[in-house]
Image 1 (cartoon, one colour):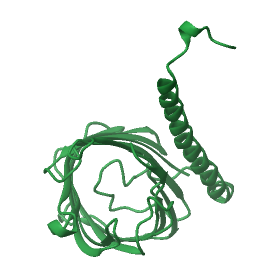
Image 2 (cartoon, rainbow, N blue to C red):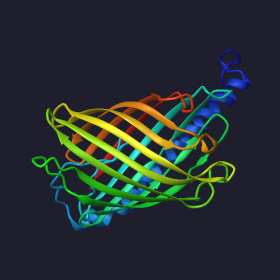
Image 3 (cartoon, one colour):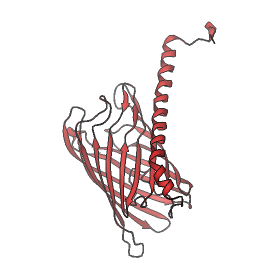
Image 4 (cartoon, rainbow, N blue to C red):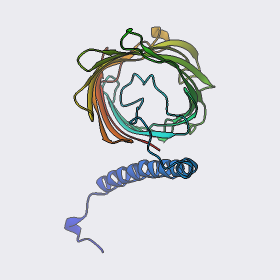
Length: 286
């Protein structure tokens, strides 16, 4: 249908709308691709066992501080995020949308394989596919509430230079994190996540940096928990990018025994960090 001249948008506006539509089509295509891959990966598990997992789903997100638990043996779990970050500390200000994911499979008691694609990324001046990380998680110690003993896990990741050329970083970037969680009175739980990463900057410079997160969870009921946390994504020298950290709040709702929906939002903890962000997550266990 040809629209009357009075209804037609200006050429510049039409191009802007077209770019926005194209952007969301790409994000949608990425999410659809992830679901197709997940269906293929889950098929053998679903065929092997139709029984429901004994414990409700336990996710690494939406918190920055991850879980000290692993996916049960023979189970598969995915966590899909959409994150929108605003940075007004640069000129011009930028808004970046990312779609990271985390795919996990419990291949043995206390161990899980992990694939963490950064997904499709779109900012005001670039777009493309981010790098993907491969990893392993080990649940090293169970918690004992009576003795005050924390649950402990270790997470080893290697980010690979696998994204599109404009977003691909230099070389393999390993990281090691430990997650330590305590159960506290009044339905509270405390989690700490110290770690170290060997990263690279946009110009290929390699450097080491610390990671640190602290989260306090409050369980409202069997389906809902809320949390506040400090997210130190990077603690490094100024020459290596400095400290990138935020103060966060969020919530996770257990929609079913094996499905969780989460949200997290944060504001910058210093002037070196983008101003704010908003993240939505859906996770399922099979």
